[in-house]
Length: 304
Image (tube, rainbow, N blue to C red; front, side, top):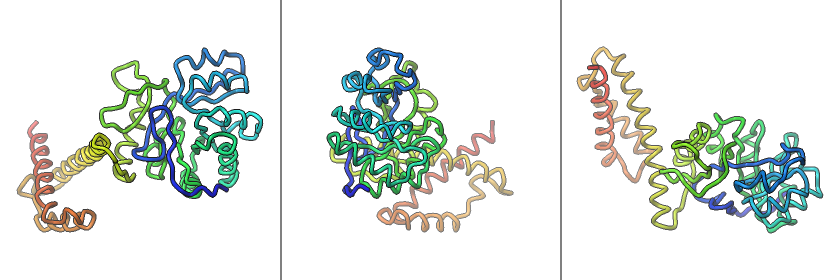
């Protein structure tokens, strides 16, 4: 098992995996799907972010056109190909074989680190054992990715479990980032990201803002982190407004006349336990504004 317990990050193209916000990576290309019958340079001409070889013949194209090489779960026991892939001088994404233990997974990651330049990222895919993924991250200190292509609904759970990034099937990469600065990579042929990319982006933005600690070092990084928190806050406020509307429909006395001030004071007191730096003094006017906005919205909807 790896003894490298210090947490570190690995750059994959324009993204930093392991520090700062979680990222979304699209553009994984598996040359194994072509069974050695395709020209790797032609397949990768759009510049793949992550590329998985079929054989050693694919490695020159991967070295030239990809940002990272994937040691895929299906061939982790092909040691000559693993060694050759790890020696390309690219970051190596080591996918766990379905039946592999954590010790086997981390042992292979250590082997790839020794055969290459040390830049190794763990990847959990398939049925996604998020508990094992988290344990491997803690034991090794290496960054981890969760491939949610087959389980896009687990995107938020993967981020909550500590994934440093999500892999989503999609187009190849560009440096373009979303408005909220959540950190993702994908070429968009339409005005909006593909649905699965949007789900993953929301997961790294909202779940990441709530659960992933950040230490921005520059003003732009700090503003991007604030944007992510604001996005999560807006999502929660929208949900709260919807629930407040349900309460107004269920109350015998609705609207502003139905406000329970004692309950609101207790709410603020409980919130102050989670936000002690703000305290009740600063939280009270914030929550009053939130409650009033929800009541106004409920009234507007009832008049339609």
